[in-house]
Amino acid sequence: MAKRRLKRPRKLTVGRIKARALRGPNPDGSSTSRTKSNYRICARHLVSSIGNGKISRVDRSTLERYRDARMKAGSAPATVRQELKKIQAAWSWGREMGLCPARDLSRVRVSGIGVRNKRTPTVGEVARVLAVMDGWPHLAIYLLYSTAGRPVDVAYLRWRDVELELAQVTLRGKKKERQIPLDLEVVQALKTWGVGGPDDLVLGVSPKMVLGHLSSRYLAKACKTAGVHRFTPYGLRRCGEDRLARAGVDVAVYAAILGHSPAVALKHYRRATMDDCRAAMKRAALSHLPSGDVLPFAQGGRDR
Image 1 (cartoon, rainbow, N blue to C red):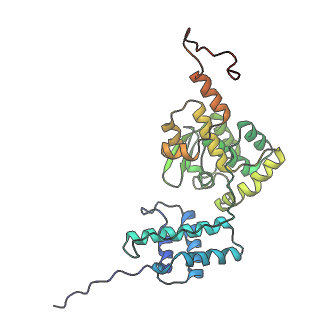
Image 2 (cartoon, one colour):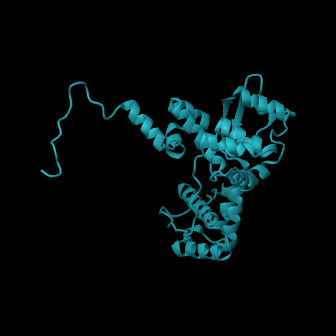
Image 3 (cartoon, rainbow, N blue to C red):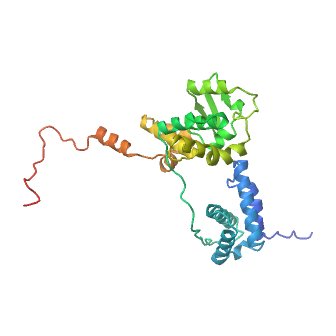
């Protein structure tokens, strides 16, 4: 009986990034279709520019040439950075699978990356912006403000996820779904908007329209009209966490509302303002001393 020939492991080529991209970044396949689409687009650019050679031959000079070519072609610095992150992820995956050398892939800096707008609006600013909006953008911003959800949560929200009788909504985010209670004002706003069929999108427009134009077109225009310094939909998410924290809600509770661990919620969304610091100092009474324990100060200390 002939011996069965053992199959040698394949070398990881740049082209196999596409196969990895189809799986998405999460091994359990829980990535959203939008995330997988982003991986496929990045993989296409990488394969067309670098070629389909062995990924083990990719080094710093290869990545630098790729970066320079993409920037010369007019690509945004943030886009190039994301593409380089994808090949880093593919390298890490290949190393775990034993398909490329057990060494770190050199990291290449991309200059000119703009600073993200991480501004958190105040409640008054959100009210002024909503006052000059209408249609689905108005409802989208109001839902983001009321639920502290992600833009993708609201963009893909369907009427089967909305339970008006129970005053709650199910948001199906990037990792897992979560139930969020709704105030009566939000329930009334949804009823006024008009309830559709179970499979109908709540906003009534495609998720691509919401994710592509809500921030850059509608929210930006509303901020300018209302005279409010521009913020993004994610600013509403940070605003929601700030309001929950200031209301004394336990960090584990508002982290569950956000769909994150407490550590991630505190690191990426909580923004302590000077008013928060003043209120904390007042509650803690840091300058207070017990009655009778007053420290004596020397007279004219500077001249002594």
